[in-house]
Length: 609
Image (cartoon, rainbow, N blue to C red; front, side):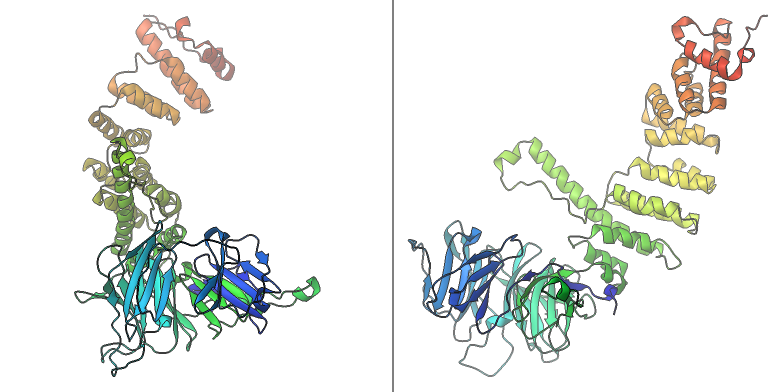
């Protein structure tokens, strides 16, 4: 398989540490994401490395026996070492204060640093879990809940192993993940992952079941809100997205893998050593090794090879593996780094012989604009609350974050739609249909359509001589009235004469000031269009000649300058009986330029009767 077939990969820059052996012991701190390499019980050195650490931390400590666990406090201020099952030692003398205690028979525990929740396994079978939440020096006991174990003969031993439980935050909510190796239903083959939602308040509830469809050894990661399940026997992984639609039975939603099972992309380990040695080829990494240890949310450690990786999702290969464009968009819109891929999908589905049908295009546009509308509404609500002064009173009021899933009209215009209109091989009617479909979708979600989209429609119609369609769109107000649109229509009069009247009608509906329209047209170097507009509204007798002559000269079109100059000569003759410009009009510079280019004889002579 090529790189385009793998949708999971190990990060390019892993944390490298000394391999585990009979002298060197390796520990991992899930809170700080640090690896501790402890040589000879610490007597010959302890090296601490983390993904975000620029420099490793090195120190020595007395060898007082085997180290069972070693960790730093947050910000690496306090070191704690455990050498026996009942004691934790702080190398520096510190005074500790008991804040609160709970009396429970505990089989094992699990800690989630991100949410500051600890989970205790209680009862004989270990299936009753008691969560505690820590915040600002206080400990809160949350409602306990029971994990539903597979049907089995009655046992007096602990049945729920900590290896089969994980805690992770998915879409902002804390979940307990239970890897059930045998489904409770006899008709359901294979293992499954059961998700229990653990809220800050209220009881924990079983909400999702991920169907694995196979048995064997599994490991779990959570990457970009996706549950990744690794299967050691087949050396493959699958991903689940609980936001995608599943099969709901009234209480629980059942999910199947989003994509076919694939291996993590092959990884090459660089050869360490002096320069002559490192010229050797990199060594292939043994993926899904029995020495791999998986930690939440996205960490994979190989103690035997001395590497810590972050697992990553590759979005581009998923585009070809998920042919349903609607489901693909639902998936991509939930990912952090999605914008570039979504825009590429939109471009791809609109070009080539395999371009998507219009209903599919409409579905994709609707999903994009729904997400955009959601953000715009949140932004508007925040602005209104801030204006009302609520932001001072409510610390919970935060400005909505603009994620990559917010793909607005500017993005679509720049990266997709304008490029589509330039592709000669695409049928013009399909191009227009796509543009109108996008505008229809914006209107459906009540997102104001930007004038440059309407301009793109009009220019495309004019380019392909589809004037009848243009007339209909304007006549039935499919294209919304705007000053820029009216100015564009004025400039199209030479191609399509009715455009002049259509633009005047639009301007009347907008009640726009005539001089403002003239300024817009002149700024776009549409000098003749501006003059025609003034003649249409009866303002050509009072307009400044110099303003128009300035604009005509700036275009560097000599024949245009001649036409404008002659028009004002004729106006002068009609109004004053003399074609010459008066000193008050300040046109001496333009008269001199006219003589220089066309000669004195080209000047208009006074007409006498």
